[in-house]
Length: 262
Image (cartoon, rainbow, N blue to C red; front, side):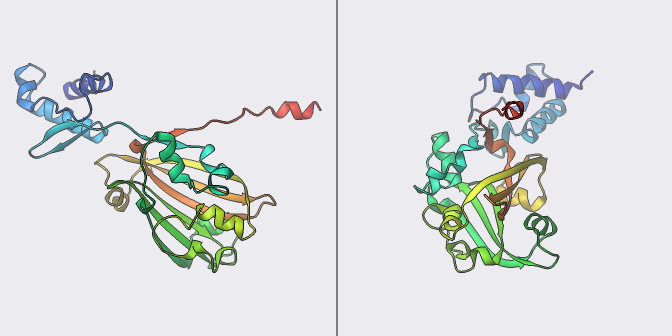
């Protein structure tokens, strides 16, 4: 049988999900729930802490316990990389997500640092480089207004990007069309990608950088980008605040058997 605080937390969570408590609305004071017979002060406090750890509410001195806004960004799966967006236009991937979500954006909401570093093992393996090889690391922090949403660090072989806008640390995307357009103009047209996702608890430095609440998790993304001949032109690692994104994929369902019957 679940403890009393867990039962109360589940009851309040359901009321939040069904709209009985709207985003931005303050939950009852602890003493009010105690007086209503929902449990002791310790029970109610534990229930509120559980809701906070699950990302449903925020608690602060002077404001009480308030229901969080639950309007995650739609993180497009395939459509965000449509060549027409970045090759023929100026809609880089994070902007494509904002457009799909009906949200405003500013190019300055992406900041970055660029440096030449020794390739970490996963990066060297992805690029097929020997131990000790150097790569360019282009690390971005993306925000929506003042709230960070994710980080993304792209790793490139120096011979692919030396002298291009990709190694320019100026804030914002790497010029019109972003990094993929830079690679395209340099003769490295992207053809296909592989993305891997991992859910995990946030590291302390990630929680601080992304302004995560206690107990919030992150989704780690590994993206490998290839040209048509199989050359890896980018390996990227992203760390996304899990509660701030809804991942959406729309694609044609393959039928491998159809090819065998031709």
